[in-house]
Length: 357
Ligand SMILES: [Zn+2]
Ligand SMILES: [Zn+2]
Image (tube, rainbow, N blue to C red; front, side):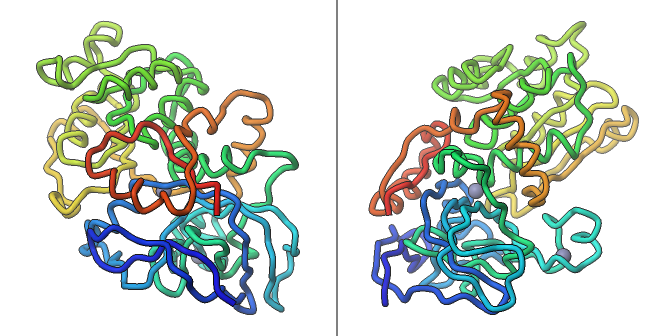
């Protein structure tokens, strides 16, 4: 039996839909029929070969897609908590459920983390079906009636922003939060910080993205192309020019990272969400002495452990947050390769979701 999937062949070569083997569940795994899957800048990074130095080098035949929602069609013999017919979503960083971080509720930084859709032994969801290893630990059952596109929109970017802002830094109502880079994760951060009661400053060089940020709850916007020095421009909109309590680098290039740290008030926290590109290879120089003398903090954040989905679902149910608002368009499986390739020009606004397999 075969199925249709978007298949990676080589770095930078537009992918194609091909007929491939249907997945089989491992004893502790499941197979999920895909209903929707977000298309992410991480797919673009991997396709462009940006993360070789991170050990994430896609091999020919790999199927991308790490923001899926679907219905379980098959379960392995050792599965205990899931059943055929359950509707689920899958956090992209799959854990073993047994190491010290998993036991401490931090499955997102599991000692043996496996990213969904970036390794040949754990293909992703730009396909009619996809497998999930160690599924008892790694899938989240959906509340009744939620829209698959909304939940796909919640996939890595919204969830990462949520975990970072809610669990990795301290935000109280009235705090100032800057978000540098208003792509999918940045817009998510704007929307969530607003829901947490913060005053939000959105920073980008694209007018459409700033407009979208404004619609999602930004109180101030800073157009990078129209100011002389981003950190100062951000500080100017805060009371007495003190800077922001929390600054989010939602892009991960050297410029946004330094601008983000530079926007902080004394004692402020930089939340680093963006991973760097082949340009930086993970290295960005920062004003260490200022960080020391002003007791600033530099905090990394990576995905979200499965148990925190409950917090998002309950806020969605009460209308406090709405990941669907970040979804910009829905496309078919055939259109996925083109959407990924088009991210070269950084013009995608919000989160595109594939919902037609
Ligand atoms: Zn673990
Ligand atoms: Zn993603």
